[in-house]
Length: 428
Image (cartoon, rainbow, N blue to C red; front, side, top):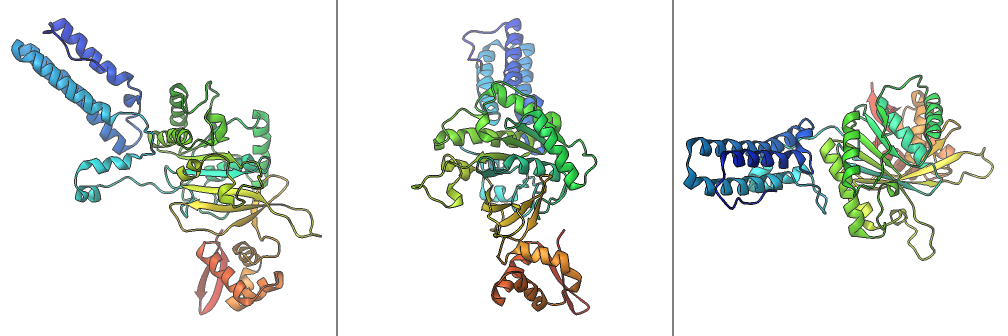
């Protein structure tokens, strides 16, 4: 920013000053002039700041034209200092603490004005609070469990607008992937196998891979600008970082440093109006460490605190004697914007496609879904469905009823009466 002039300015000095003022706006670290198209509320806020610079120019020009030398010095100092200070506050970079553009409404004045303000709100990426518009989701699990496979499958399902493991997706999304886990050839092979397994001949151009860039730390302003440009060029509504550790150089056990890293992810989301999916690892097993899944995620508690939702992937041991299956349990550790959900079990086939299945020997919502999908037309009452559940797993009737209730509440099956007859249908 420029300082206060120490002497009366000539006309040529005045033009140089105006040029410097505009240069500060153009070169500011937020790159405000390049992002005016992103979101209406962002445009309004940034345009006000830019207009203030124009007010400075007009006011100073008027002073020069009218030749008021006595007031020139005072007015140029006053206008420049006040307006540039206001603009700097509005256009400043990401904070140490996570903040959203919506928080700016708090500075509008009274609680009445705050409550009357209409905040923009788009449809969620994944319903049930799993991934809200502009939100952050962490997918965590042990090394080698298949997190990147699931990440790629989720990207494909979101790109074509299909449900993700029984969770509804209101709209198709545009995805950009920043990944350092696999070779390009491996990504290609996996995508082809997933497409074949999902019965997809061709994909819409809704999935993009970010161009490599060094350095690739989120704390580096050059990389942050590169990432933002890549997201904007792809017009992505979701960006994926796989794995998180490849995009920072900080100590993962340091709460302050990791929060600072993740605040950059928030910054990218806010500037590009996109949601984020981060792939993260579990820590090494430790007999002294807590065994709860909520604490298995590697690194500082600030990582979990930052996320809107956290889901974990763990192995499931199949019943002895069964044909060998690849089973994974998905636990919803945290859902900030939705109700708690029970774990789900997925079976992975040879083409890397995951499908809902019933966990071995348990009465779960997934078992209810599986039975309704198989026998739905023949089920005429809850009692009949309970018998099917009890025939599959040894459990009390009340346990079977509870599984049906949860399956209905969480949207796996739809329960309705048609001509006085109880009907159950799978949700998808």
